[in-house]
Image 1: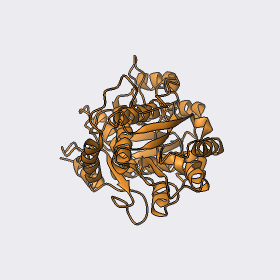
Image 2: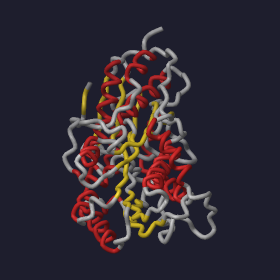
Image 3: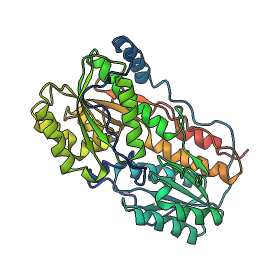
Image 4: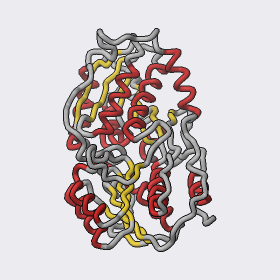
Length: 388
């Protein structure tokens, strides 16, 4: 294995915020959801929503939507060279996916080059072009949309290079991804919407349908817009719940600016008892600090998601995060390699089996480290890749 950039631990908490769900060239718009209440006057609520949320939360705790990776024996071709073009290795999430893809590729005897995008669109383009120049057989994109690198992807297709992607949006008309990591809920944006819904179910259940929510809405990415959509739609089932304030922000705000916005929202809304964040990264980038500084950390329920080690430390230490949805980022790395392996052999791409689970201090919280799924996905993939 070779690395154009060394995989390294997360160094900058503010940068880590955007890794899990950032799609940097996503479609624009700032359609902020209803801030005065989660149930607009034209929305039909069903009961108080609590019983429904209780049942959904029970299933989310159990992780019933996680399924096995594909078990069919597809074997593999040796001597392949692939490039992992990663949004940023400075982010815990980006490093985890890249490391897992390296590990998976190494198990197949492939040469794996990891390219660090460093949150810089021009570098994403450069990474793809370097992969083309190096005559790579395949490219795996993590959290990088087609729209911003379309010209380079067109060149990769002309060169016969297979492209797989995770947490990325394809170009709608050209479809330049040859395969995408999909989940038991469907494509990534559908999974992201289910993450927002899971946060809402936890909130509705824990407040018994009386939540007063400060809602954090990142409006500059497809994926975070999907999380928000899923959250608001699910909150509509709870007529006794209210979104008392919506803090709208972009990736450029993450860090001190967002921390200040959240601190001000907490002061503005003394009646609030819940803070909803789209993903764990924003918590470690200052939102948890704002909660602690408010003096109300013991009174606010704070839900986010992702299951990274840094965020789970906040939950374990009661330092500004209470609960969240969780997924396996290393599993996504293995799934990306599986897609390329199947594409090289002209075989159909299979769903990853990744689903949705919820953690809090009483459920699915490991004593140390990040969240891990119950399924040994590594063993399943490696068995599938064995020669027939």
